[in-house]
Amino acid sequence: MNTLFAADALLPGGWAKNVLLSWNAAGQLTQVQSAAQPAAGAPVANGPVVPGMPNLHSHAFQRAFAGLTEYRAQQDSFWSWRTLMYRFAARLGPQHMEAIATWLYAEMLEAGYTSVCEFQYVHHDADGRPYADDATLSLALLRAARKTGIGFTLLPVLYQTSGFGGLPPNEGQRRFIRSTDSMLRLLDTLKPACDAQGARLGLAPHSLRAVPPDALREAVAGLEAIDPSAPIHIHIAEQTKEVDDCVAWSGQRPVAWLLDHAPVDARWCLVHATHMEAAEYERGAKSGAVAGLCPTTEANLGDGIFDFSAWRHHGGAWGLGSDSHATVNAAEELLMLEYSQRLAWRQRNVGASAAQPHVATALTLEAVRGGAQASGRAIGGLAVGQQADFVVLDAAQLALQGLPAPDMLSAHVFASHRTSAIDTVWISGQPRVAAGRHALHNEAAAAFVAARSQLLQENRAP
Image (cartoon, rainbow, N blue to C red; front, side, top):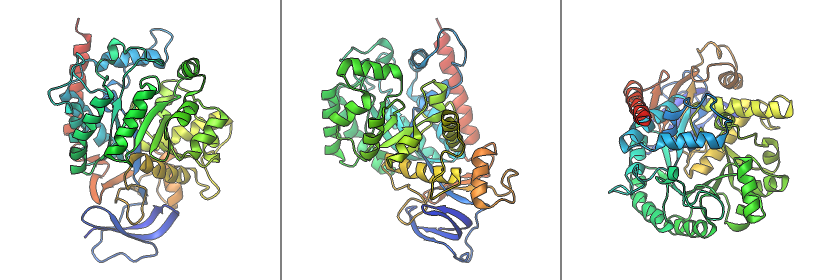
């Protein structure tokens, strides 16, 4: 029977009591009934049910790199970190990619993410040559998603230059480079594979510094011919140097330039968008685009703090990503987002809203809604027509025991170990995590450690 009864569930409009969830064979919710009675034989959730969190920004291979740059060898910045990351990626093979991504996606599911947008920019072999099958690394990621059961949006990255004004790519970028025609051929190849496993295909122009204006225009037009509603994600305004370089090149800041020269609308996700002026916050929010916030990565790399209040003031949509995977934990990203705003404004409970005074509730609902939009998939929460993707919190966990449901979610985000309060995770009506563990946990972890060890040995070899 495709049903679950929850004493408490977080619906798009807020918390509801005695909720019966029902879904069809395709994993799509067909009934969300509050004030219901448990159906005969229907399982009962062990705690509050909350919508699964979409992860809107991931570079899967970087999970194996996490923690390896936390030492000072120079005046460190995003740019010095990037050099080390390129070195690590140089010898990554398809088998490494699949092993790392399989563990990462299992880890995401255990941490409350139920889908992921994979921003995939490693395309070619170690010498920068296309594989015999040009889609080799993309297919490795699709297999990892299929094995773990996580919802998936694949975003192959268009990358052509090393800086504004058409600067030639550097040696560390040789595995990323594609012509616009080559990218569109890859998308044509990948579309049937994505459709076959219920994944969504989009496009990621890497950044304004990596994609010249003509290529951006042609790539977006080509994508529209393949799928006019496909998501488009772009890194933008992450670093102040990037902003300064864009102004020197064009006379405009990155977000302002993009809004003036590209058809930015609700299909677009502006990843980071950390450094904007007041007019950019207003215009960006009103474009309908999603701001893709990655709070733990932005903190790890010293990017800066997004003006969350300004974006929300203009009705801007937003969602969360784990990006470089310094942290893989949906609740941790919520906590970091809220705490960064408290530090910036010297206030508490910044993320609360008039409709939802509980910070964790307000942020969860908004992040799910924006993450679903950026994913291009029907994963916008516990509502009829959406996928049955949800997380059951463990009401017996010490931090949650005896609390009302809104306080249980608050305790999960602010007072627990954040994964310890997760009981089960369901994707399309199928339980993928039980008692906090994915079925592939041990197998995937062992393969991940082996892949990382091999990569580290190869990178240390003379």
